[in-house]
Image (cartoon, rainbow, N blue to C red; front, side, top):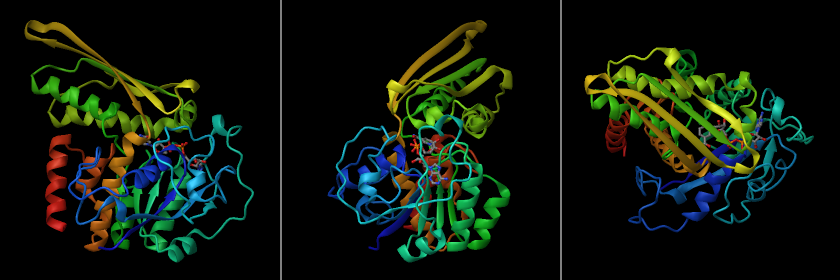
Length: 360
Ligand SMILES: NC(=O)c1ccc[n+]([C@@H]2O[C@H](COP(=O)([O-])OP(=O)(O)OC[C@H]3O[C@@H](n4cnc5c(N)ncnc54)[C@H](O)[C@@H]3O)[C@@H](O)[C@H]2O)c1
């Protein structure tokens, strides 16, 4: 079986967890269960078939270093669960564009190293898929890299809440280029979004309305620090909100936009990559008698989505192998918060399993 060659843009906490995972699970047996993956072997591909061949960032603490060192460099602060050996892959300097926001301009010191031609690097490295882990609010940088993917004929997995796969114009461009894209905004294995969606579906399945609901999130990583800048998190808020309200609409129920509040709420440095979510749902049962539920979820943010990305990479490779271009609908619906079309998570999983079966 061939390798899956990936490039990564943005060597932050999420990239660190993903790359650590490739080491941590390097020697698993085919029948061994891996926590967080749909299948140990998916479409014939194992986790050890994934190879990072190119990497880009802008931070002086990471650019020029071997990827194995860059993933532990400041301000990355996620849990270290694997010691990654030297990879031989150097982190290249990338165009800054709108990558660094107001609250990180004193934290990230931009590299002064020469800018490279990303298309040449992608082509020379043999990269087939670009995984984007750019910071939240990087609209211009995301569009810049989406264009590079189209020019270099590289597929894209857009893990960030900037709408590309779910935007009709961009989706068409990927379709015309014959390049698959899975997006937008990665879901976690069990994170605030999926928990909130599941609770909403539970209430609705039992005939109970969602009268009011909120989801407040706090954390101490640079993603949360970035989100202090309210204008940067506009699309994140839309993505997270739609991910939950879509479930209400799918059940032919309604909620007024004034009765939903979903979004990040504060940055608390000492929490590091620990994210804490508070979810409340107010409802009524028989006789219009009020009832409510309060949930507090505590997760390590970055490893929580790394397994989902491993599955997305293998599905993207299956699409490449079969010559399928454009947004991969079933994979986007199951892996992403803002896919081109929303389904319930149970339906999305069923559709994706059928898709994998069909193309394996
Ligand atoms: N579970 C999760 O952690 C999760 C879930 C959904 C979405 N996301 C999204 O994934 C993205 C990455 O999250 P993270 O926690 O790794 O963030 P991070 O802040 O740790 O990493 C972002 C990296 O991008 C680099 N960068 C900034 N501007 C750049 C540019 N122009 N070009 C190249 N690199 C640039 C930064 O230096 C940093 O290394 C965020 O947008 C986040 O919202 C994460």
